[in-house]
Length: 453
Length: 182
Image (cartoon, rainbow over all chains, first blue to last red; front, top):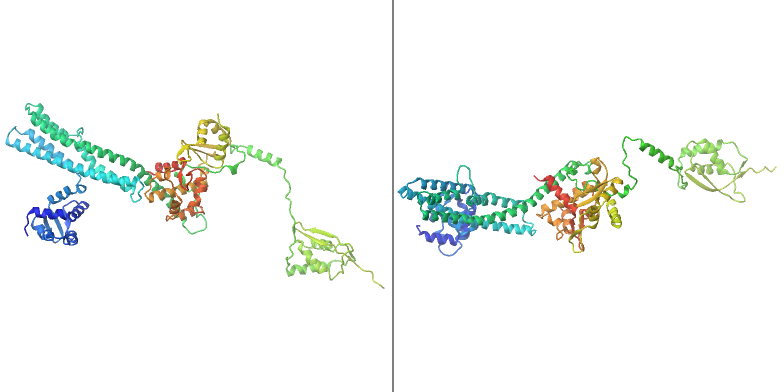
C-alpha cells in the first residue's frame, strides 16, 4: 500500500518506543542500520497491533518496505535495513540516543573542510568552479555546525546521566560499582568529548596539515588580506567559524566536569583494585594450607603474604618482656661472664619435696605379695620387737630394690600370724616415710611370753 | 621540656603495645589533636633517647607512633598481633569493595562500621576459614576489640557501637594502594 510520507512519519512518531528499540539494537551492535526481522515483528505484535486506529496497517513490514522506510528486507538472513533519514529523525527526537561523533568522524569533517578551502582558493574568482567550490564549503560549514551542535547536546545529556550516577555513588548507593563508573567516564571523555574539544579548539596545532579553525582562518585571511579585499566574505566566514567555535566553552565545561569525576573515581578505583589484589593474595596463601593434615595448617607470622604489609610491623605488648635490656654483641664473652655472676649470686637451695599420704586403695600384685611374705618368713625368729612397723621397714628396705612404703602395709598383714603383737599400755603415734609417701601409725610391739612350766 | 604526667601516660600506652595516633575522637565524634602525640613531637629527641636507652625502636610516622623491640632482624618484626591485625583489616577492605562502599566509610567520622557490618563480614564466604587459618578462635566481631580497638588501630565512636580507622589504620590501607596498584 503506497502512503504519503507524513502519514508514515506521524505513525512512527506515535510508536516511537518501538523504533527507539530498533535504534538501541543498532547502537549495541556494529552500527550498520540493520535490525532483525523478529525484533520488529515482536514489537509490532506486542505494541502496534494493540493500539487503536490504522497504525497496524501503516506500520507492517510490507508497507514500510514499499514506502522506503525499510529500504531492504532480506528474507534469507531475516534482516531489515532502515532508511538513514528515519534513524536521524529518531536520534533528533531523543537527544540521549543521539550518536556522539568519534575521532574518525571529526577527522573526516576536518579533511573535507581543508580540501574545500584549498579548492575555493585554487579557483579563479567568480568563475563557475569557484561558485561551486564556495557552495560546497558553505554546505560543509552548515553540516559541521549542525553536527557539532547535536554532538554537544548528546554529550551534555551523557555527562548529565553520568553525573546522576556519580551523585548516587557519592551518597553511598551500593548498586554502583566504582570500576564500571570510572570506565564509563573515561570512555566518554576519551572517545567522544576529547575529539570534539580538540576539533573546535581554536589554538589546536596540527603537524603537516591544518586544524578546522586554522583552515577556516586561512580562507578568511585569503579574502581579507590578499589583493581580493572582499571584507564582507571574510566577515561571513569569521562569523560561521565563531558560531561553531562558541561550543568550545560548552565542551570545556563538560571536559572539566568529567576530569573532576575521573580524578575522584581514579583514587577510589585504585583503592578498589589494590584491595582486591591484596585480598586475593591472602586467599591464595591459604590454599596450600588446605591439606587436611594436623600440622602446618595455620598461617604464620612469617608467611610471605605479610611481607607487603609493613605499617604495623613489630607491634606487640612490651610489658611481658619487662626485664633489663642490653644490646649484647653476639661475639662477646661478657654474656657468659654475666651468666656466671648471676649463677654465683643466686641462692640455690635444694628443692623441697612435699610428702604425700599413702593412698588407702593401693593394691600390690600377687608376685610382690609372695616376695614380701617369703622375706618375712625367712627372717630369724625374734623374741622382742619394740616397733613392728620399723622392723618390717628395715627388712623390706634391705631386701627390695624398688621398696616403697606400700610394701609395709602388706608386711604388717603377713607378720601378724607369726607374732602375737599388742599395743603398749601407752600407745604412741609414729610416722615413717620413703621420701615420697608418709604413713602415720600407732606403734605396736611384740614380746615373747615366758613359758609357764 | 617534657611533661612528666603525660610522659607516664605515653609510657603506659607504648609499653602495652598501643599505637599513639596523631588524632583522636572528641566528644562530638570529630577528629581532634591527640595530646600524647603532640607531647612526643614537641619533645621528640627526649622520647627517642628514652626508648632507645631501653632497647626499643621508636617507630615514627607523620601520623602515628609506637615502639617495637630494637632489632636488625626483619623476621623478629613479624608478630602475632601484626599478622592478626593485617588479616582483620584485609577482611574489612574486601567487605567495602564487595559492597561498593567507598573507603571513606571506614575513615570518615560520619561513617564507620557497625555491628551489622561486622556480621556481614563474618558471613562473607571466606571469612570463617581465614579466621581459622589465622588462629583466631573468636568470630570477626569479637576479634576486633582486642586486636584493633585496644591497640588504637580502630577507634570507637563516642556513644555508639560504631568503629572507624585511626591514623595508623588509614596508613595500612594507604600502603596497600601504594604496593598493589597497577
